[in-house]
Length: 113
Image (cartoon, rainbow, N blue to C red; front, side):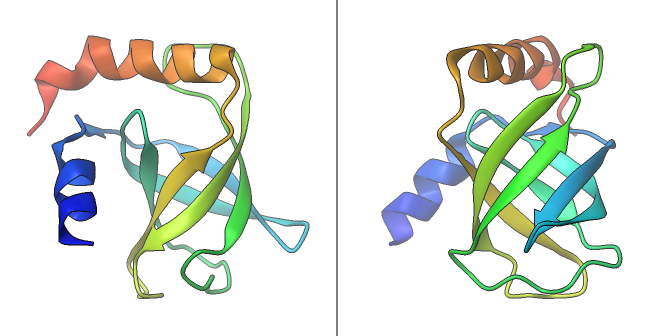
């Protein structure tokens, strides 16, 4: 388990601030990102209900600088249902979706704080 966490932390995380529609039980809830990597993203909780670990949710968002909407599935990997936020891992990204996210991370990865 610790090795998986270490590997996840080695992914380049790019600080971002954009809104995401987070679908919970078919209902959209507005959330705000903190960072994004090739493997997932971290969302600040706003007014959505809590989601349990390993819950699968749908996301709708646009990566800054692009005009394509990404519809992605993600799994809750950490956050312990805190009021602050939740970490999500992407699952089943299409090649095009992965390409958009990869390009953004590559272009902005050196700007990490």
